[in-house]
Image (tube, one colour):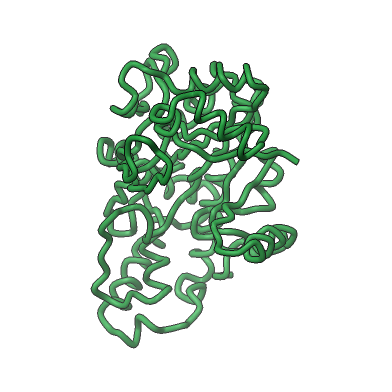
Length: 335
């Protein structure tokens, strides 16, 4: 069985290599460390950190020193965390892991990147009204796809065994900002529709697959307005496929193609550099359809799929893992 501990670079920087790796080998007795290489904004409690019990993580920061040659000519680039100074915790971790016989994995948040979203709004997903979700990056945008592949390749120089790819998909409406506010009862349908990306690249991809994306965008706008204007309409459970004669489900299916092809390209880059890419599905089977996650297709595109076992009991984790055996879940409940 493969075992590893998720950790932040600040753990290594603040605790020192001896204590950090001593905890892994002597207390946890694991075979590897999964170190965050790019992470989103957060506030965390670190019970045994000798310097900071409560720490803020910067928006969309990298916890390694990027190779300038790798990013030459690319519009989106990782920005090192100010906590690093001149140090490169990934280089330090690689050296220590190799010396102690541990595997080094990169815990990498790809498209939930508030820093890059605010810096490059055109690379963020856009809802049917053109409002941008600036805490995210759209996987259909060519610059975002180029950034993703370069970020995967960047890890190879550290001898990383596996890139654990978190957030390599769409996210929907309720995700990512620290003070999200909803003074309306949106209802599940309006919330779902507001989370779909209708940027020019997503619409172009859907159009190539035979979906009338521009017409659908207008229909979705009207449906959202109808549901926001009336509480009874907001609670309307009518199947959304009746609204656009199946075009909506086809549009969501097109988004799964966007995610699957990007994951396949990223996995190939990892393989070309002697690494393995694991796709992290935080939602679980049957729950990720609005995020463009099609598990049967992804299972053919990447060498490994992981789920985040964030639960209060071992039984809940086992139940979530067992659900992955049910690959026959429908890709969209709107069909």
